[in-house]
Length: 209
Image (cartoon, rainbow, N blue to C red; front, side, top):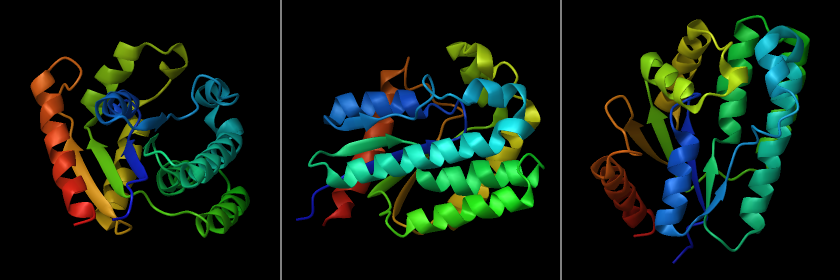
């Protein structure tokens, strides 16, 4: 039987990815790999001036995520990853380009790097997508109270959600579990968390059967 190596949690800013990855890592004994936010040298500047820092930020995330992928494949452990390399390209970079924050030349350079990397990337065994409407995202962002996120605009979150829906609608790289977060509070409500775990168990049981 093949060994479960890689679970990934995807979703918009504020959807609950990091918290769910943390809780699932404890529940299943998986090793968590978190997105580099607190030590990201570009994130604060980006939210203050997106056009100036968008390309730098996306290159940083792309390299960070590719390094994580290498670590996942070299590890003997089962790893749960907070966000995927595909989201970097198909959600965030694409959105910033479409909104004029990354010009055509830089965007093409970014895509060239991404496509070179993705040849060496294996998709996760299971992708968990946290689907959340903008009001839910805003509520979650306000709760975690990161000062550099105060400048995030509703329009930006809405645009990201549109890209997420398109990407998830076309996702064919492996098993996919969509969790509707709009009426779920898996932090405060143990039944909500148990429900998510039950759905994950069903997907995992069918993976190698």
